[in-house]
Amino acid sequence: MTQNKIEVVSQLDASTYISKNDVPNKSKKTEQIQPTWFQVYRFGLQNSILGVRDTLVLIFCNFGNDFFLSGTLKYPLLGIVEYIKRFNLYSKFITPLFLFHIGTVTMVGVPYMIIIFPLQATNLSMIFGVFGVVIALIQSFMEINAISLLVSKCMYFDTYMEGVFESVLKANGHSDFIITYKKNYLVKHGRVPILELAGVEIPRDPKPLKRPNNNIFWNYMKKSLKKLVPINIAFVKFAWSKRNDKIYWMDKAFPEVGYFIFTIVKLLFIVVISNVPIVGPLTVVLLASSMRAKGNLKYYFKMTGYDHTMIRVLVHRHYGQFFGFGVVAGIIETVPFVSFLGAISNQIGGALWAIQLIELKKTRDSIVNKNGEPINPIQP
Image (cartoon, rainbow, N blue to C red):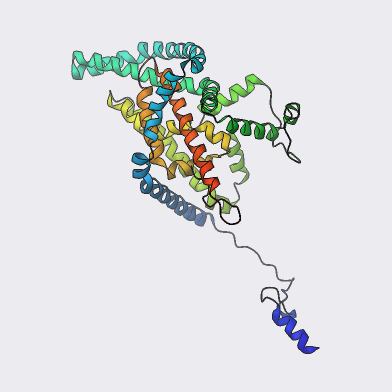
């Protein structure tokens, strides 16, 4: 008997076998030592520096191959070709966007020419003489065009551009991608009866995440203000609830705050450099290239379920692809008065880029191991 007991005990794993002497004393309380706020600031700063270093490594290691070999430079140009090829399909978006854009150009251009242009013309004419007035006029046209297009994209381009994106996918045989996204969207937002009427099989126990708000005006205002104001109210509330959580501030908040400060500084620098005649707007095209490319690909991110963190990491990992697309797209959009046509063709180019990513995803999913699991994780 004793031998059997000894054998049984010897077969137990060391981590599961605890003798009576090893039982912890319940009277002794183990208290976790909280770091001081000085340690929080120090480690948070270290995390931010390491985050910047890792980001720069991601950008520069892949930049050459992504910029020269990925082929994203061609998609804005292919967007123009697709635009001309299927003009009847995309022409329905031209009239409303043209009317809205002309109104925006008028609202921006009249105050600009009355207030800012005389100051620019006076200063530049003192330096360059008569040519200073010509330079100021060209600078005014470029800045009015850039500001008007930015306001247009923030206020009303969003709905039409999503229609352009879906039209490109449907015309190129990827309607199943849109249908899958809309099914998931309806289930996620509690629109199950619509799917039942359409005869779509509903997954078991659908759990809607939030109650839909059908107020069109409120949804429009909230979406517009969210783009114009670079502050996430939900994040501010969350950060306030974590104000005494030192571990959170040490690990998560400092890198986010650092990235927010970097974004604000970058935007201020873009505003300042844009006032430099001729060279300024071209410099802005280079600096804002990744943001422009990300905007033209945002409907793909939306339909695939990418959150802000995943998008940011993806942009940093393949910065050369986004930079190449954004530079060509930015040059197309700098043409005054017809920049809204360039915005449409760039969105078509972004949809063509998304089609290439969808096909790449399908190819990677088809490569499986012995257990039927995909070998390559999905990384666009």
